Length: 176
Image (cartoon, rainbow, N blue to C red; front, side, top):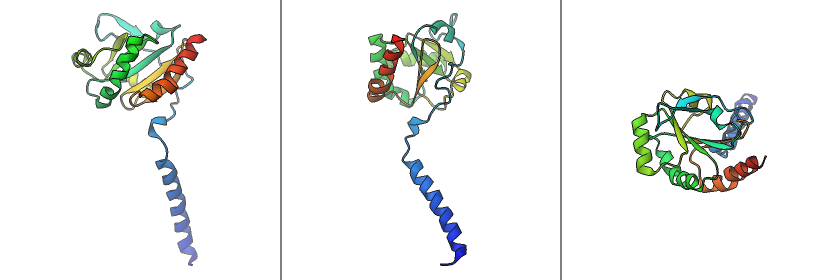
């Protein structure tokens, strides 16, 4: 075989191997650089009470979930019934971050599908979502008592993720 042919063939083989490995990875398991770091500070208007604000400082001393959602988000509908059940169980405070949405549309959506949140805040321009590294909704963060992000769920929360990852972590963090 010609030596000039071996080099491109070897390069193709390496690229093909990387492609095969990449196709086997789960895109929902993208590690967040914010895990183990303080949650980005924010102070935003409340969705249902725009005269009042709420922020990360209000959650200090509590383990809590931040769920990034929007009325225009189709995948948010997939996880929403599970979040409604979680909200009713009152296991952990659940804060909604209404992302790049019209407040009236967000309020209507919660009326139609149920409101699982202890409260929702408005991130109309998406700046807080950007600070959290959100690149698509829904995303959910577990934040500990010190305000440190401990877990990030990319995409809809599933029963499996809730039972095997999120709730065990919440319970562990609530003990400390």
